[in-house]
Length: 435
Image 1 (cartoon, rainbow, N blue to C red):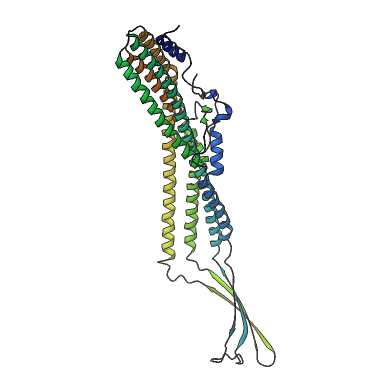
Image 2 (tube, rainbow, N blue to C red; image 1 turned 30 degrees about the horizontal axis):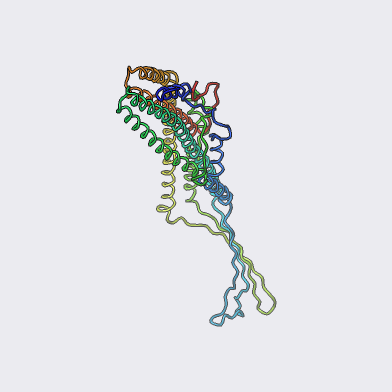
């Protein structure tokens, strides 16, 4: 029959025989959360995306209106009534009188207004596309935060189980007279502290899940299964290639380029505003002086007089030229931001990938060996209980840091895709949880 000490030691040895790192493949396919599912939900349900898509449709409806002639004006009336009795028997009285007027902008103005509206539509489309990449990045970041929290909870749960086994060993050795009461008290403290850390981590998990549910317009309490890492490419194209992709695909850059083109059209239109718009009209009237109705017609043409050109048309032209320079400066600023962001994310990807490989290949295996050695020495009294606990807590910390690095790598990859406006290509070599 085993003594309590031998039973506790056997339980710890059995626990160490099970790999501590939990692979994503250990989860049932029906009980996991995949990034592509989250992104599909975000694209179809996010309220901000739906609002910007509606705004883009509204801008498209405004486009034909901008290049269409103003509505003609029809006037009906009577002319030359006698006063005060409104007598229509005067020789010059005419009833009815019908007048039709049409304003025609100076040649080129309507087409320029149509071009400006067309660029506004394209900018609205680009804004909606840019919002999608922003939402995609946020959803991915929350997904990888959730992944990190769940994996750390798994590691902390396993560590709590081992600490409880350590607690049993310490108590059994104390009862047998070969241990110290301080070891028992320290074991109690470590178990309580780990239990508190787990509760705190679960609260963080609930908060992250609530924010992710809000992003896809679902109730905050909607259950979310544990995320899986997915296939993250181990390498990405070079900086020059990524910047070329951004120039082609990033909606923010397309929107800024359209903004520059629109500003130039506005400058061109402002330069034409000094030229007068024309107004054409025809009038029909009739009168009756006793010998039957007499019908009359008139035609007219008018034009606007830019008598305040210095404070109106020329000022508007100068304003349009200043706005054109502003649009060009904003385009340069967006390009600089994309360049800096790509460089920052490449460095972050390299950091996370390099450290994750180091942790998987060297740091964690060596830490596990240290725990096994410390446990063997503790059983024969060569090291104290504190050494054993510290060794196991070190493994716990390294495993949690590994999962955090993997989550950081996923978030940096999602941010890089958002920065260039396209997904990264798949590669034969991918980043995985363990090798």
